Image (cartoon, rainbow, N blue to C red; front, side):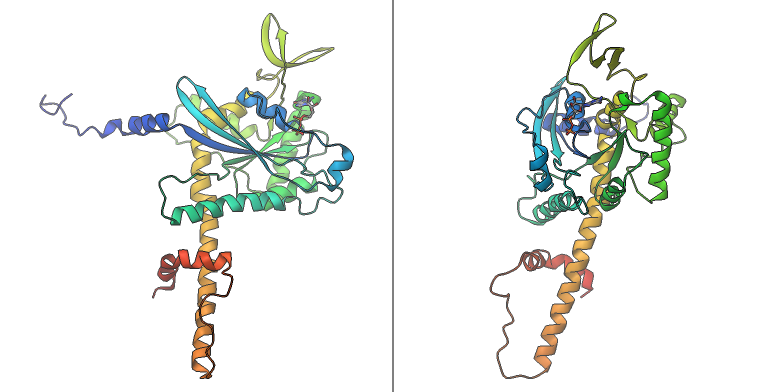
Length: 352
Ligand code: GDP
C-alpha cells in the first residue's frame, strides 16, 4: 500500500522488527554460556552435543592428586557458528576444578568474582570514550549440573546457586539422566524443585506468556516450566538406531538417543537456549543482574565520596597549619579511579 490509495495511510514502521532483525543478522549474535557443577558430570560432553562442535579439543584432564590442590579456574572457549546465514558467536565459560578439592567451602567464590569482573569491565567501558565497540563478556546463562546420584541437592549445590542467583540466570540441569529410570527422573525433578523453593533459590524464570497467546504456545510454556531441572544426556558419538544415524549412547541393552524427547529433555533445553529464550536471557542479564551490580557500585562509590568530603571538611575546619595532602594518594587505587570516572553520576545521586 502507498499513502494515496485511499485506504489507511501508514508510515512504515511496521517493518521495524524486521530491520532490527536484519541488522542483528548482519552483525551476528553473541551469547555467553557458563557451565558449572562437579567435574565428571558431563558438562563438556553436553556442550559439544548442544552446539555440535568440539570445544574441548585441547582439554587436559588432571589426576586426583593434581585436582586436590587445584583451585577453581575459569576457562573460556569461543566458537563462531553459522547456520542459514545467521552467525552466532558463542562463548562457553567453564569452571574446571569446581567441587574437586577436599574442602569446597567458598569454591563458588571465584565463579562469582568472574561474573562480577565481567560486569565491572562493562561498567568501565560503558563510561569510557569508546562506547560503540564495547566487547560484552557478561555471562548470560549458567547451566548448573546436578548429580543424578544424590538425593536431591547437595549442600554445595545450594551454596553455589544461592551465591550466584542474583548475578546470573541459573538454569539447573539433572546430569546423566540415562542413569535413572523415568520414574526416578520424575521423582528427582520434583524433589529438586521443592528444594529450590525451600532454600529460596532464585533460578531463571521463564517469562509468563500472555493470555492471548495460542493454546499450543501456552502448552509448550507449561511443559518447559515443568521440565526444570532439565534431565539431560550428552554424547560425542554417533550411533545407528533404527536405521538412522543419531547422537547417542550405546549400551548392551539398547541405545539412548540424545535428541529423542522420550529419552531426555535435551531438545527442550537446546530449543529454550537457542531458539526461544536466548534474547530473554540476555535481556534479564542486562536489565536485572547488570543493573543490580551497577546500582551497588554507584551506591558504594557515593558512600565513599560522602565520607571523603566529610573528612576534607573536618580537616579544613580543624584549622591546622600543616598542609594536608588533599589530592589522590601516591598510588591511586582502582576504586578511586572509578570514582573519578563516574563523578557525574555521583553528583546526580548526591543531589548537589
Ligand atoms: P565434565 O568433567 O563435567 O566436563 O564431564 P565430561 O563431559 O568430561 O564427562 C565425564 C564422563 O561422563 C565421560 O566419560 C563421558 O563420556 C561421560 N558422560 C558424559 N555425558 C554423559 C551422560 O549424559 N550420561 C552418561 N551415562 N555418561 C556421560
